Length: 68
Image 1 (spheres, rainbow, N blue to C red):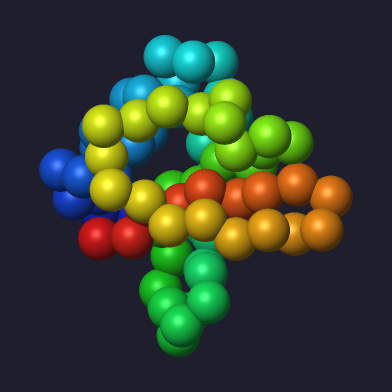
Image 2: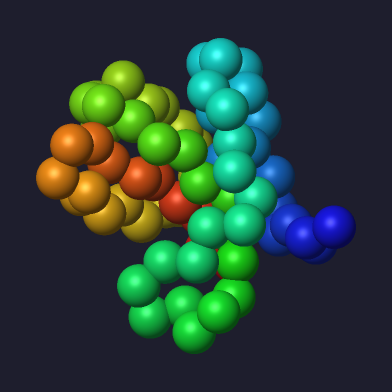
C-alpha cells in the first residue's frame, strides 16, 4: 500500500468527504513512475481541498492529484 504524506491524507479525506472515488496509483507529469492519490473530474471547480495539489487537463476532464 502506498504510504501517504499528511498532505496526501488530507487530500484523500477531502475527496472522500465529497463523494469522489480516489485512485491511488496515478503517476503525473514529471513524477518518473512515483504514484500518488488522484481524483478525475469533469469540472475542476467541483473539488475543494485544504491540501496542496496539482492538476492536468485531459481534454474531456481533469485529474487532480496530491504529490508527496
